[in-house]
Image (cartoon, rainbow, N blue to C red):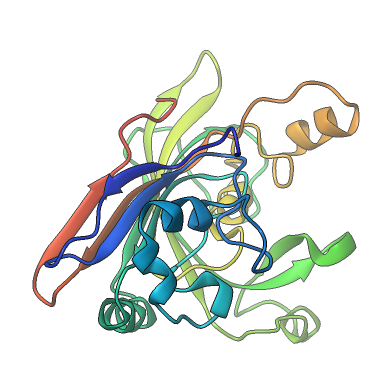
Length: 251
């Protein structure tokens, strides 16, 4: 059994047949194959076997509505009935599921997207396409509609992704910022990448934070990434708003 264990935030019932789990950082969201047991979905299905009966887009993921990166902790939705899965899939397709991420970021670094100041509560919005980048295509890079034709040709999926960013608090002594981000449609590493492009790389992010990456390459100890999926909001059934918060973040 994995030492990393999910927490159950909501158990499925007849009125709300879905599971809300809190996945720890370091645990994969979904199985790689049918025999993979080291993942959040497997742990949830052991507790609620009805999850196995749901047929999803990917057979081995069943009613899993979305995934989080392995390094990211936070909230996920798993449908427990086929009807619930179909409804929430449509809600997700129509950008009606709101996902909130909380991060502690470095600040004061060169920005590559937009000007900003250091006032608490500042709001920013960044919208871009994405393209794979680097060895093994393990990273992504934003591509903006006004970028060159060469850059735009590297975009595989011509869908625009938006991250709404609010700076909640600045710590001038540590030169860090507590940031809250919301999205309704998501791409791999979207929020972390967009934050880095705004000069707000997530502390401990060994992919998009240059200092954390350098420390990892030098085999220095690195902090756990200060980033989590902290809140999720959606309707089920139609007209009934569900809102779940992750209480025990590093903040």
